[in-house]
Every structure is written in structure tokens, then in C-alpha cells.
Length: 451
Image 1 (spheres, rainbow, N blue to C red):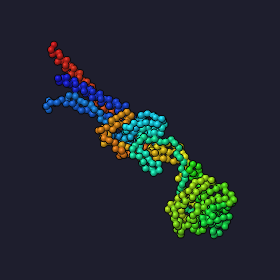
Image 2: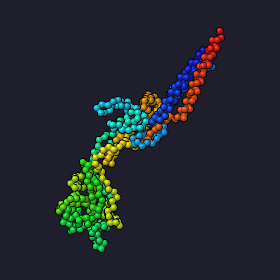
Image 3: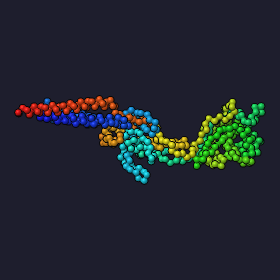
């Protein structure tokens, strides 16, 4: 029985080394596969039952051991939708079942992967090179906060981003204590002031509040430029908002904007915002009202509606300035025209952002990360994906790993290590086959005894 037992034991050794060779070949074949996790081989001895002093090994059993928790190298990429995980966790992905009326149908079973080579398909979904679709949590476009609780396949709409009308202009500036207007003459006190007597009506905030078209030259010569900015109406049409400042006395300025550039005669051309900007001895606004609202603002026939000019705290000052101008420190607005989708990127925070031709960007979703208490117990499926099992535990959404944008995780296979194991496996296979040959020779000797 000893010789036969030796043969059986060696056969199990051949099977075990064949299994190891299978694992090694798979690892080497996938050494360049993105996010691949190599498979190691575990060997367990089989021992015949019996008294301790007569027990002997009767075989070996080979089983696979996963390395799902062993990270591969992180490699940079020029593609902004490629992502990698530094640390624990897996991307949550879905498998496509088919297409129904130009929409995709997905399996209800979630899969998990470290393969992050995601790009947008023709429907706007993010899909990796193995055909799995990235899931994430929806983000509220207005607040920027996560609005969903269940990860779903991320889809970026190819529709135009609707135009947003301007409702607020942020304006901060220092108005020269002595404005160098065209009329300003240091030898003539008060020549830097706007004098209502030079106009056919009173354009100040306490007067009629506008400059007639026929008084354009007098107005330009009595004021300084305050800058200009492009604003947008509800359809996305552009409007050029021009601002000028007029000093009325030692401590007071008025702001005007160009309402109708083609006005003539008594028609209003420049409109006063209707507020006196009074400065104290420290050349700060007193009171510091922070903002001014223009009701029903119209520029060259385009209606913008109610516009708030936001100065903020201490946003308008009147310190001395050698140039005698209005030094604008901030001038922006919150409107934009319609825009076409230009590109998509995933940031290091996991936010999927769409970029549009109008310069705007919109956060669509946040990529979710799932972790497991026993990640090496996940079951492998094709394409570098995994299924949760009873042994792995249920997924925990919100893993501790960090997402890295424009990067990919390489295979965790080490070619040099695999070739070393290949040599050892080959030698072990040869040794087991030699035992079978030797056992056969011993059997032949035993048979020859009876001759």
C-alpha cells in the first residue's frame, strides 16, 4: 500500500502544481490589466487518519488566495475621467443588460471594481474598459450637496446648459478723493464736481435721477469711468453695463449706468442708481449700506429686471489716488449664456463635473466607494469586477480610501515574483513526476520477485 499511496500522493502534487501554474499564468497574462488583483496559491496537506506515530501525508490540496486588498501602483493619466483609489475600497459599478428605446437597462446586482478607466459613452454614462458603468450619488446643482442616498449609474446630459439671467453684480472700488475729470482744474475749487446747473435737468439722486441725451458731453466731462461688465438677460443675450461716477461735493458721490447709448434730446441716456454715497472723515461709506438694488434695470432696450449691486462691507471707499480715477478691485456678475457640453472630469474629491462652452461648470454626482470587512472573500467575475459574498460581508458605502483624479491603478502582479514562482512550480512538478517514475520502478521490482 505504501507504493500505491506514494503514487496517489504524487498525483495530488501534480494536480496542485498544475493549479499553481494556472494561477501564475493568469497573473502574468494580466500583468498589464488595469486594476487586476493577482491570485496566489495556498497548499494544504492531507493526512490519513490514524495514531500519531503512524500518520503520514497522503496528498496535497491547492486552493486560490485572493489579493483584493493589495494595491497596485498608481499611474498618472491625461484623461480627466480616469480615477484610482489610494487605500481601501472599490468603485460601485453596474452591468448593462441591454438597450430599451435608446435607454440602457442595468442589472439590479451591484458589482465592485478597482478598474477606473472610465469614459463617457454615447448616452452620457461613465463606463470602464471592461464595460461596467460607474455609480455615484446625485449632487444638487443649486446647493452642491449630495441629494441622493442610493448610488445609481452616473449619466451626464448632453443638453445645453440653460442661460442664467444676471441678478447680482459684485462691485468694489476706491473712488479718488479728488477725481481727475475732464473739467477738473486744481486752480478752480469745485471744478471736479458735477454741477446740476450745467445740465438741462437735475441728474443727481435727489433730482430727476437721469442724464438727458443732449447733455452727454457735459456728463462725460464731469465724471470718471467706473468700469464695465457684460451681463445677461433671461435668454442669454449679452448686455454691456457701463458705470460712471460723479462727485457732487467733498463727501458725496453718485453712481450712474448707461441706460440708452443712442438717446438724444431729452431722452434718458445715463441713469442714476438713486443713492448718495456719503463718506465720513475716514473716507469710508457712512452708512456702509453694503448693496444697492436697481428696480427694472434696462440697458439699450434689453430688460435685465431687478439687479442688486453688491458692495459688501467696506466695499466702496474714497481715499486719495494720484491717478484721480475709480480703482475697481472687484467686478463680477452671476449670469451666463447658454452653453454646450465641452468636457467631463472627475476631481480628487470624487465629484463628477461637466464643463460647458460658456465657461460654466456643473457638478453632476459624487463617486461612491464601498469597503468590505473581508475584501479578499469577494468573488471574482470577468473584467476585474467582484461580487459580494456571505464571507466578504455587506458593502459599507463611504470607504476610507481616497479618490485620485486623472490616474489609474495598475495590476498588482510582479513579473519578477511570478517568474520566480514559475521556476519553483516547475521544479516541484518535476519532482512529483519523478516520484511516480520511482514508484513505478519499485512496483516492477516487486513483480520481478515472483519470476
